[in-house]
Length: 169
Ligand code: CUA
Image (cartoon, rainbow, N blue to C red; front, side, top):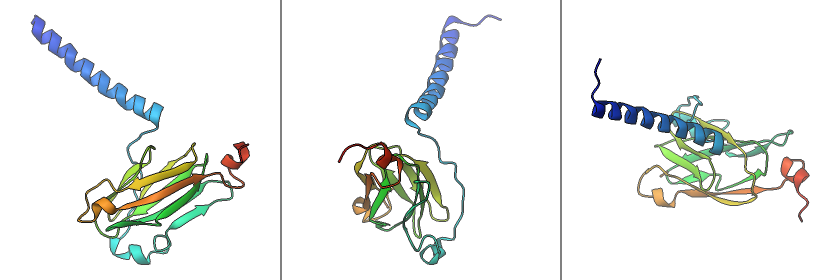
């Protein structure tokens, strides 16, 4: 079979582009721990505010030092407004919305997900640097979208990895 030279060039160019795309997925997964959301759990949006879990948003620190953060994202705020989590421990965020689609992005970290009514969004991450982080909604959700934000405070807590490893203070 005779394949024209230009045809060959474009075939290999197409193959090369696919290789670059797959490699970039691998690099962001391995290097930055960025991965597509994989958690599927449904919830009736009408019951979010009376749900035993989501009507009590907040942080729970477990006996192994890890933490679970339950968040309500709604027009136009997050509850809780201030989230304190331990440094160096796995932190699992569980979020849902009683109204429309919101975003939950912890700026300067790999924590980022959509919050879709009807579903519980969940991801687990670790914060190695103590400090204050800004959480923003990154899905346009209405007139107050630009004021929808919260604060995340990562700190060394007694009995967690951060406290054991820290010599400072
Ligand atoms: Cu919530 Cu934009």
